[in-house]
Length: 111
Image (cartoon, rainbow, N blue to C red; front, top):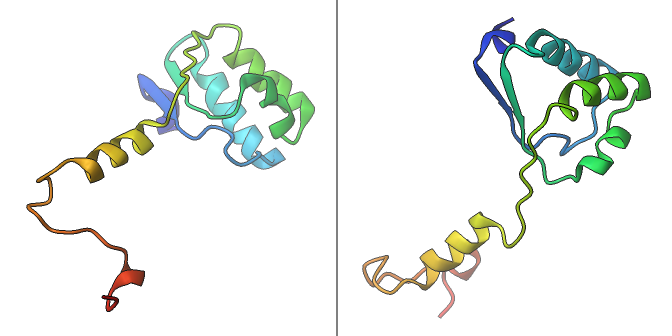
């Protein structure tokens, strides 16, 4: 399995949607293959305290969290979304669009 051999595996949007039993088993297999041999990064907006309840099978949830949480280095970010801040900065920067105005498709044809 290629995911097992990667030196770093990043799972972005971890548990954005709950895992059913089949998905959880697949994740467990990957994490089990990588345990103590390769780095895995889980990126999630969901607090760690809610991870267990978002994995359908409690036994598999225990196994996944056992492989992830106990050896983890947690980085908790607070504040505004960087996408939101970057978008606001881009839209407010004078001259960024060469004097062109920005409007949505809904505004086309309106004067």
